[in-house]
Length: 308
Image (cartoon, rainbow, N blue to C red; front, side, top):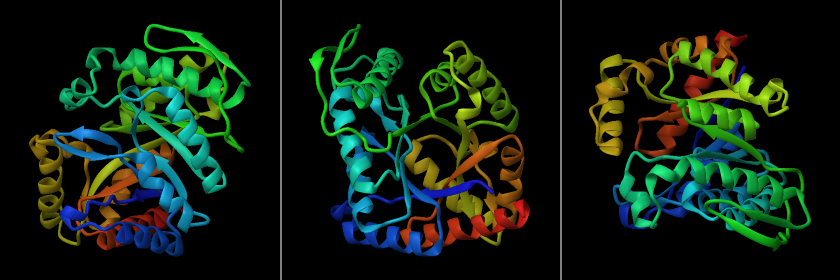
């Protein structure tokens, strides 16, 4: 049985979403036995933003068992020194329950341009930043001169008490190489079962080349789902939500986004689990956070029935 994560939800009072509702949802998810919550991250994605670390910090303060993860945090948009400190503090606040899921994004290039960053350089910035995060968390002093970042005898305190696990997101070959070099895990998005299996092999190759043990890298998948007893209703619910978010036709995602009863969605996920997925991030198409929790629990229970 893989670990099951659901969206943490984010607040925007102008849109009617309060911080209190997000924290209450996290408490209910923990009480119901959901393994963890994940937070998305954008500075200005078609005008919408959500800071993944800020999103998770208050949830860490009001829960005790719930795992916390960004999926994905757009690391190339930030300076790694700042992120290293924020993650170390969140690690201590959560008692080691936090893991940093990172990705390069880029679906809306204007987000990078608004930050004064060339979108074509986001992969290189990511690699340098990941290298620096690991050093800043473990070394007393860090000096580094790269193409995008420079540190001269920089010291970081506090440091993580138990280590922050890094999960690399994405499906490109560059993301797979990155997961093999730097990741404690990989979370695939928009991947077929065939691509998932290929990814496992390519990540293993990159890990071995970097002197790492591929067995230490956890595989997982993130999927949008439309949970409803009637498949047509589930499809309409999910399609509307995804088209509104991504500004693309649902048909572009449909093969990777299951809908229908929980049992049908669990059946869709089963081959990924057989191929080695040890965590599943569910993104229900529901707008109401309470319904998001109900949908995630229904799929979790259906997965249990298959895995048991």
